[in-house]
Structure formats: structure tokens, C-alpha cells
Image 1: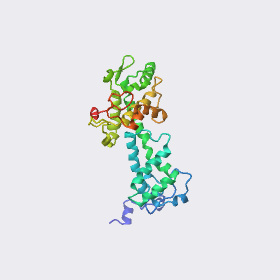
Image 2 (image 1 turned 90 degrees about the vertical axis):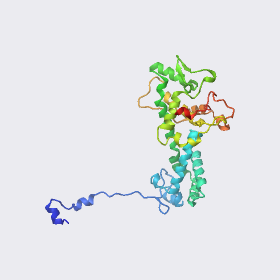
Image 3 (image 1 turned 180 degrees about the vertical axis):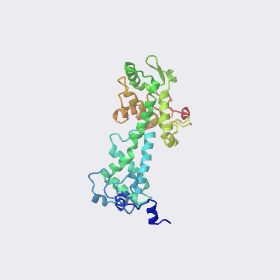
Image 4 (image 1 turned 135 degrees about the horizontal axis):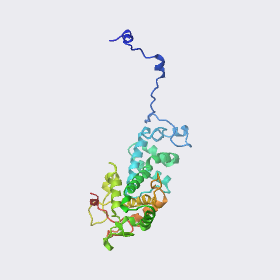
Length: 325
């Protein structure tokens, strides 16, 4: 064992006491448990620590990050995200448009009403969701922020497949974009001759089977990331037609894929894509385009059992998943 004298002989000196005093200390963030919580909520100017203290620990909002909130709050938000993501795929791509406040509360209550029988803490959390608008606004952001994120993925996939339409440059590009966006004819398979001519005629025209749309759906919903919706919600891919037993993509998913081409083409409307700009995928204009594809009245009332698979103007056509192999 080396002594202090041995260290000094080998040129090794004891650490300077002043340097030891200057070493930074690692300070950890407080962890929220059922017995301890910081009191000031995030992103809320109207709440005070005293107001936060009036709620049970399981319903308090800490100033810490999401992973340091109470296990009740984390558990509810994670299940809320599942509901929001499934809604985007099988029901509605813009559920929060013009009603974000109501939608946040609806989703949060749907989960806590189901969990309230498991733990008393969820009953406290439900009571605060019902009574506290500021609380709902803050935690709701953690949930519905997934919607624009996933819509942007679809828009990016559509932009990557825009070359199929051979837009060209300058005035030719401008004219072709205008032609493709007119009456949404880009959802048909076709070719320029010199206008976009759909392949086939009459009953042979297969709306929503444009190769660009098929590739966009494959890229965005199936192969872009390991947890893509195509894998995550495959149990929901059931045909709406009694005589068709093969899995079929949900109407809303096909409509969202078709709508994604709207911003992808829109940025080329002048014949040249502005530098540094991509197609945004939020707002009323895209929701209206989505509703045209969705054919909302039929979706809300249910597709008729004898509906044709070649109905024009909406996404009721059965898109067989075998086509994506």
C-alpha cells in the first residue's frame, strides 16, 4: 500500500483543497411520488402553489417533466395517446379542429372513467379534469400534440412520392398542379396526354389506386417507422363489405393519405417550390379536403352493404392489403 510520502516521491500530489471546493455538484430533479410532489404546475400562470396544494397528490401537476409526474397522471396520459392515435386512423384525422378544449377533456375523461375502479387516485384525477380547465389544457397538450406530428409524417411521405406526377418546371409545373388539384383527380391512376387521363374507363376506373397514393400509404403507415400505424392498429382493418373477407384499410386512413398530397402539391402551385418550405398539414383548408375524400355523411351513417367498390368521389373503395405486399 502506497503512503503519502510514496506518492510525493513519484510525483503524485494530493488534490488541491481549493480545487475540490470548486468541483460542481450534480443536483437531481425531484421525483414525484404518491407522498411527495412539487406544487407549481407547468405552463399555467393562473395557478399558484397554494392552489395546487388543495388537490390530492395523485391529481397534482408538478413543474417537472412528464416522466416525473404522478403515476396516475402518467398512466392516464399514455392511454389517452393510444385513443388519439387510433382515432386518427379509423375515425377522424382532425378531431381537435375548432374544438380543442372540448376534445382534450373528452379524451381524458374517457380514460379515467375506465380506470377509476382500479385506484382511488383516478377518482381524484377525474374530479380535477371535470373542474379545472387550466389543468386540462396543460396535460391535454401532452396527448393531442401527437395529432399534428402524425399528420406531418403523412405529408412528408406524400412529398417523397410527388415525382410520379411528372410535374416538370415553370409554367408546365404550375398548369399540372392546377389540373391535378382540380376535383382531386390525383387520386386516380393516370398519365399526361396532355391532361391527366385516368387509366381505364367506366367501371374499370379505380379511384384511390394511384401508385403515388399507394406508395404514400405504404411509406407513412407501414414501413416508415417500426411502430407505424399499419402495424399498430392492424386489428381494425376489417372489410365493411359482407362478401369481402380480406383485411381492408379504414376509410379514414385512405382519405388522410389522399389529403396528404394537397400540401405536397400546393407548394409547387407557382411552378417553383419556395426555398426551405415544406407543405404544412394543419388548418381548415386541409380538413375540408379530407372531408371530401372521407364523404362524411356515409361514414357517419355506415357504408351500405351493397355499396359498389367503384364509388367515385370518396374513399369507400376497398383497398385490399394484399396490394401492399
